[in-house]
Image 1 (cartoon, rainbow, N blue to C red):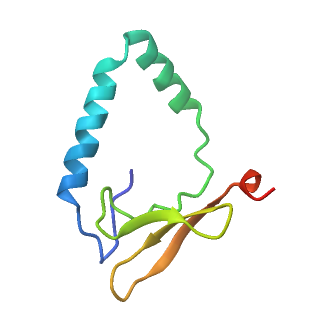
Image 2 (image 1 turned 180 degrees about the horizontal axis):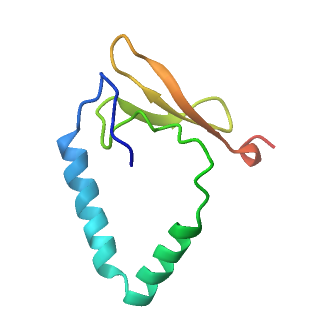
Length: 96
């Protein structure tokens, strides 16, 4: 992950503790074979896609997500004075 350069970034320590605990538990539950397969899969992932969250830091208090219009799942910044949509995932099957 790249370093956060957002001037509105604030870490949510509760979310960070929960996320790190979940990641540790998941990592502990994996066998060596599963871990190797996951590392191989991550190594082949393309790096050419732009990351919409490149300026966001992990566990930011201001990063919120939720449903928008039908088929949309939005990620937005809620920092006062910087409210904006960061990314929108669109699921066409929800509206058909």
